[in-house]
Amino acid sequence: MHNLAHRHSAVRLAVLKAMDALVLAGAADAVVIETVVPAMRPLVTDHTPAVRSAAVGTLAGWMLHASSKARTTAAAGAADAAALLAFPTQLLPLLLLAVKDDNAESAAKALATAEQVWSLPLLGPFSWCFGGHRC
Image (cartoon, rainbow, N blue to C red; front, side):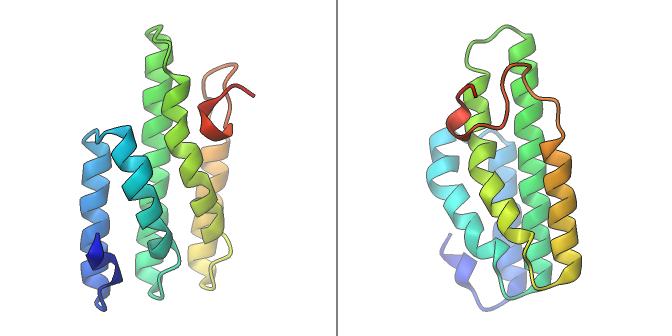
């Protein structure tokens, strides 16, 4: 993760792609919440618009993936479906941070992504509550 501060944006983008692969491959929740989520903040506020835009796209992908996984788990009757929403709720503040981007295109992409994620039908009685708890 130390390459997130590399001076070349191509290196930071490569780290982002590696983190994306790690999350989508099913990394342990503790690793994601303790390591990957905090590592995303510098990417969302990066000085290069391409890095910020890629970070927003990656956040959206993770949130959509996690909510889909939570719905599938709930449909299968698993009791821990709400816990799966703890991860995307940690990402939502980062996505909202990107809404105030200096680059109008990046800000619009972040806002559209936030609206898309917010409109997802989640787990019936569950909603976007911090910590994955019932609201």
